[in-house]
Each structure stands twice: as C-alpha cells, then as structure tokens.
Image 1 (tube, rainbow, N blue to C red):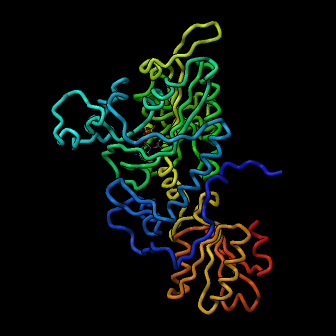
Image 2: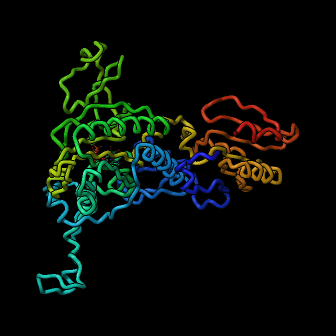
Image 3: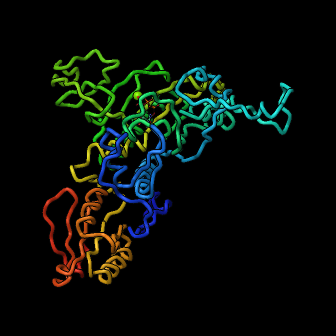
Length: 442
Ligand code: ATP
Ligand code: MG
C-alpha cells in the first residue's frame, strides 16, 4: 500500500552538478557580516546579501528553505492546517479595524503614483485603484484572514478550521545585523485557527505545540517552550519556541532540570533562583525565538464582526489563535548551532543534498557512472564534476557546504573497486565497495 506523503507534492530536483551551478564558494568572510550564519551561508553560496537584512536565497540556500518548508507542510497537514496564499500588499482598511495601521513595524508605501497621475476626484472611479499610500507591506496577516473568514463563516458547522501560508513578510527592523536571524524581508509560516469556543482553541493550541516541537526536532533544533508576554496581540500569555544560542537576542530563564522556561521580559524568576515547577535551578540564557503561538481570543473577530450561530440559534464571536515560524530564522539558527571551523554541518533532513560526490582527477568516467547510479536510486546528490579544481579545493568546498555524506572517487579507491565515504563532522572515512554504495544510503 502506498502511504500518502504531503512532501511528494513538492518536487525537489534530486541532482545538481557543480560544473553547472553558477554560484561559487569563497574563502574570505564577507566584510560586512559579523554573524556566523551569514558568514558561512554567504561563503558557501547559499545566500546573497542584497541590502542590510535583505537576502537572496541562491540555489543551494533555496533547497534548504524548501526542505524546511516541506517539514512544516507535513506537520501542518497532520494537525489539519490547510495551505493558502495571501497578498503581501495590505490595505489600510484592514489594519485600521484593529488600530494596527499606526504600529511602526511595517513599510508603508511613500510614492503615491495613483495620485500623481492626476486624479482630482476624491471618489474612486471603477478603473482607479486605491492610492498605494494606503498600503503597507504585510508584516502579519490576522486582519486579512479574519476579513476573508467573515465571508465564509456563519454557522458552528463552519468551525473549527485552520489555514496557513508560507509567505514573505516585511518589517522595519532597526537592527538587521545578524544575517538570516533578523531580516527586513523574510519568509514566515503563519497559521491562523478559528474556533467556536475557548476550550476548542486551547485543545488546538496544544496540537500546534506538539507540531512545532516535531518541526524543530525534525529540522535538527532543540526548541524550548517558553512563556512570553502578550505583546500587541493579546493580554494573555503567549508562547515562544526558543533555541539556546549566545547570538540570540532574547534572554530566557530556564530550569536546568525540567526546562520550564519564561522570557525574561515578563518573568519574575531570577538567575540561580528556584524552579516553580520542580525546584531545580533557574539559569539565565541567551536564545533565538524560532516560533511563537498566540491565543488571540475574540480581538480580531470583534474588529471584523466575525460571528457564528450555535446549535440554539445564538450568535457568538469566533475565537482565534495565530502561530508563526520564521523559515529563514530556522535556517540561520541551524547554522549557528551546527557548524565547525571548516563550515556548515547540516542535519540530514535539511541538507541541500544527502550525498556530495567528488570525482578526483582522472576518474571522470567512473564519477559519472557512480553519479548516475546514485541518482537512479532516488537519492539526492550534488556532484562535484569540475575538472579545473584541485582535490584540496573540492574537499574544502564539501566541508563548507556541509552535506552529511561525502563520497570520494579517486584512482586509489577505484583500484579497490570502492568509494571513500565520510560523514561530515566525523574524522574517519571508510571504503565502501562500488556494488554496495546504494545499499548504505537506503
Ligand atoms: P522577534 O521577537 O524576534 O522580533 P516577533 O515576536 O516579532 O519576533 P512574530 O511577529 O510573532 O515574531 O513572528 C513569528 C516568527 O517569525 C518569529 O517567531 C520568528 O521566527 C520569525 N521572525 C520574526 N521577525 C523576524 C525577522 N525580522 N527576521 C526573520 N524572522 C523573523
Ligand atoms: Mg518575539
């Protein structure tokens, strides 16, 4: 029986030849980057810095993003999340409904072309559009989806549901200096859930918590569930998923025994104090917020009059939650955690390729054959077929790019009808007979 696997819907091309990749690695750290994630990702040809806090995902980097997105999509599907896609341009009327037009995190559009084209009438004719100055580049989408939901939800039978998107968000971040960790333009998975009762919201909130733990674990991150402040969203506590790392801009208090954690911003706990849950020791740590969850209550449904009629014919406001994950921030955090002096050490599930195959001088033909063999077995392989590069350069690149398995084909290994196999991050290599290479991969 074939099992349904959502990731199969997203075609990821399994092979790439380095001779055909237009990007190149570099030895030197970029001068204008101080964070490890930006340095290694730029040097490895994963990202290109267009402007402060604004990055291009180059072919290798885009593959990593697609792997992270694939894991997110699978776990979203398991908790009933349905994918959709909303516009990045958000009109003032949406944010006016909640007073968030005044919040200074978005980029408002300053150049008002529609007005400059000479419209004198204050009423818009059929063919005129809203002036662009009435838009912001979306920094979150609660208002937009609540407005959409109010078109479709009228009865308790329409609830609950949860919808998400993976989309570019824009924020006017004053401190965009930590590479992918804090962008002015970045990819976010934002999920929104709609419920008939608080109880149902809290039930789903726990489902999302479970899904988030799985997502971060599968990506290769250990994320700590942390109690946080309500922020602009809600008066209740919210929750963050924090990865311990010195580069992190957050500070949390965490129990060294049971890992109960609170964000320092709201916390009454103290460094070296006692854990309120297990009496373990509380320690203060720096951390990266990779995701968060917000119980929204009826704040947004009230603003958009999003109501449903229950079994008795009574009308109520819909209860909502929203839940974010920063894909680029996850990628940046992964590099911060998983690297050594030589380069990145991607966890297998998010590595751009499973195998990095190096054919050394004089082994082109055998290299091609092994490449064909591996790719026909359905395994993702990056093939360093460049003939103008020395063995040393190829080894250095393989370490920097950081795929889990390095296969080396040389005249020496071929004499033994073998390939040298080494795991990234480990010292020892071993010889595997050509006949067995696919078996060890499956
Ligand atoms: P932070 O506290 O780090 O500024 P936030 O609390 O404003 O983030 P949300 O608005 O809830 O974050 O966004 C959801 C998720 O999007 C965050 O958990 C984070 O993973 C990611 N994210 C937020 N801002 C950025 C950014 N500037 N660059 C990259 N990812 C971001
Ligand atoms: Mg935050």
